[in-house]
Amino acid sequence: MPVFDGGLGAGWVAGLGVRESLLVGIGSDVDSVALIQRQQAVWEARSVVWLAAAAAKADRLAGLPGGSMVHARRSLVAEVATTLVVSEGVAARRVDDAQFLVEFLPATLAALAGGEIGYRCAEVMVRQAVSLPENARAGFEVVALAGVAGLTPSQFVVGAAVAGAVASGVDRCASSGGGGGAGGLGGAGAGWHGDVGVSPAGGECVRDR
Image 1: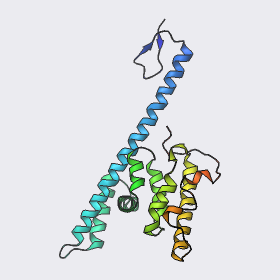
Image 2: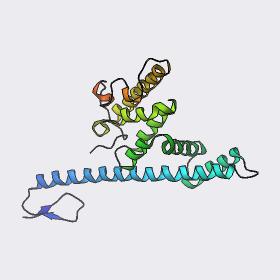
Image 3: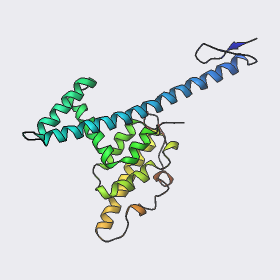
């Protein structure tokens, strides 16, 4: 006797019992949610690129005769806030984050575009990297993003903080003549999670697969 397949209500699976059919349907439903989340990350990455492009145009506009950087940025933020129906504070942060991701965190943007991380993770990366010297950011990305597919959201947040601290320490060490550099981030080339113990928790940062 054919039974309902448990997916979206449009099919039947011959030869399966009700229990097996429901289990298959649950797995299919959850896989669909994961796919949607990865697709959302891809669209977020595209939004980042477009916002950064808009910011670059606003900067060029400010450089024209009679232009003003303050006025151009305020106008951009106001337009983003109105169009996306968010506060101007949120709009300003989205624009700033987009510029920073495009200019300084290409690996993070690529991970977002590939659906490996969500936008919240990208925000975490920006918050950590913004305080780092520019020459330490690439090494920070390598450490923070290593093995990201196997991390829970809380592990990623903690790991990004650890990677930021390590990168900052290496930069200070290199500046004082003590060696180090991006290639020697505390010996953490395989990823921070191999050395730091954290307890897993829930959230919506890392794309689980």
